[in-house]
Amino acid sequence: MTDFMTQARAAEAAMRDVFPPTPLQKNAHLSERFGADIYLKREDLSPVRSYKIRGAFNAMRKQQDQQLFVCASAGNHAQGVAFMCKHIGVKGVIFMPVTTPQQKIQKTRIFGGENVEIHLVGDYFDDTLAAAQEWCAREGGHFLSPFDDADVIEGQSSIAVEIEAQLGRAPEHVILPVGGGGMSAGVTSWFGDRVHSLYVEPAGGACLRAALKAGRPVSLDKVDTFVDGAAVGRLGQRPFEVLKDVPLPDVIALPEDRVCATMIEMLNVEGIVLEPAGALAVEALGDLRTWIRGKTVVCVTSGGNFDFERLPEVKERAQRYSGVKKYFLLRLPQRPGALKEFLGILGPEDDIARFEYLKKSARNFGSVLIGIETKRPENFSDLFARLDAAGMAYTDITNDETLAQFLI
Image (cartoon, rainbow, N blue to C red):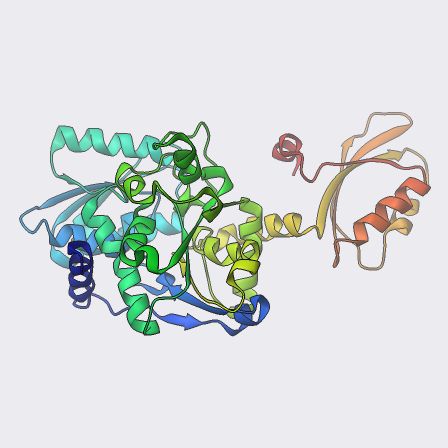
């Protein structure tokens, strides 16, 4: 057994003084759909509802003489550090992006109590990270990286230690969400070549794919923060050293709207609350159908810190991605009966979700923003055919991101 595996096993054993192993649950719904034995490693059921407590615990237990810890986090690492600060009785200074969901900020305060102070700095994680490192260099304390730290990576590897013990063997595939790469590096280091590891990142924060293409970690020009738990603009250097030989086909970048569909499905069908990053591994199953059929697969559901005030946005994104909701601009004649004529064109499963005149001053025509929800995506082909036949001019703006920012 390598030194890393010995240390990972020791870290996992030490964690039992703080929290029990998270469940490894076979999911009948997903197993039937994909013709495989699909297990969920429920990191969303840890004391802080994410795996981040593992890395924080392991790094902090190795710094027993340290009384001040400083970290930067999009939310989950912050909660892990805050939990451990209160547990062992030390002080923590935690930097979080201004855009962090309120649920994560509030839980960090609850977990840390009087042992932590929180600074909201920057719109993006990388700005927050820079601010935290500057503060730490100026004021002192031990900076605890959320992913680019050997002890943190070792702590995250305890996920793999538990999986193998709970399953009684190594699975054939493990699907890992990727942010900065700490958890992926830890699990990959434990399983090595014994397991086919697959990596999933949000399309708006695909830093692992960028690093593999460049041969080194590189900073993304732009990051979509919707999948906040994995919205990292640059892969960590230490994780890259572990992951640098990962084949590009083993890395999947998923559109943010597509992840929303899985969040809604897991909530409605299974009663499982997942944050966007926590749903990445489950959603990736659809891209891996031919690889995983008949195999044993573990999806790491990395977090469940979801603010339900975001649910309308998640539902909206899921509907638009699945094709059952569309927005379009309709050029409606300014004459009596025109609106009634349009309403008569709608099908029996079509429902108006939004109707707004954008321009009321035109003499002959008016522009109308219309949102339509329906039960089946193919209903829109029939609707648009009827609009064409009636001579009504319209423009589908559902996927026009520029217009959507202003109108939807």
